[in-house]
Amino acid sequence: MDFDEYEQPSWGVLSPKGGELNIIRETARKEEAIKEILACQEGLKAMLSKVQSVQKEVDKLASGNETLQMYIDNLTVQMAKRR
Image 1 (cartoon, one colour):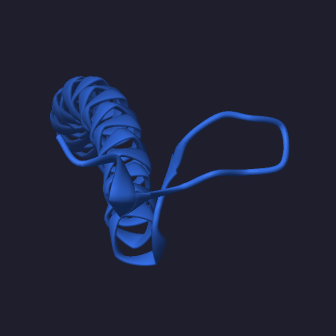
Image 2 (cartoon, one colour):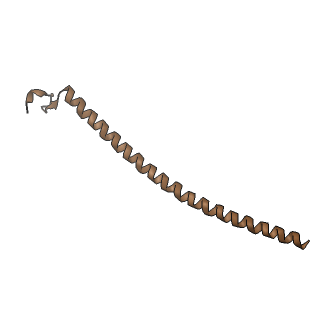
Image 3 (tube, rainbow, N blue to C red):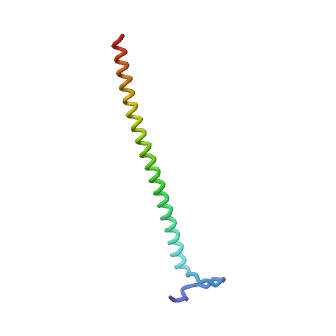
């Protein structure tokens, strides 16, 4: 390692020069983007799970409505025959 590649800040700690600093910043930015993407994916998975559970409930209610409609239709037919 050659220490000529580093600048000496005023407080005495070595820091990388411009090009290397840009690489470090870019890497940090990419890591942050990856974390954000993963968080969004988890949020989407949670929403998908909720949508699927709501869809199951809607399907149950639709089936119940069909059953009730058949019952109402049968009652209507029976009432018509009695008159």
